[in-house]
Length: 64
Image (cartoon, rainbow, N blue to C red; front, side):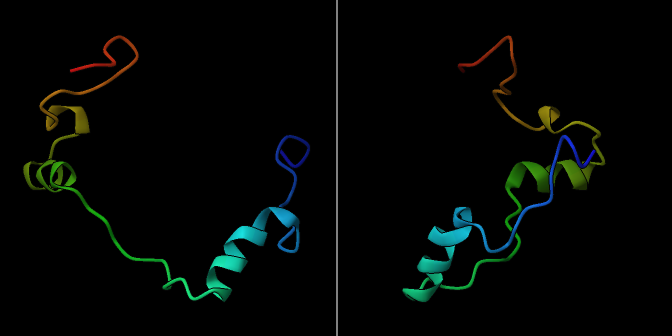
């Protein structure tokens, strides 16, 4: 698994844009974003989120 997904170096340049955004005054990120579909799924005890979406998208249907 380590050969396929090597550990991420926290000091690598890929993180520089995020660090610069916080240094420039970006608000802290984090929180909980639960949409109406997820709420309905949990409320009704449904197993699949596609049962709550009016126009679910999948590999065979990419448009409404």
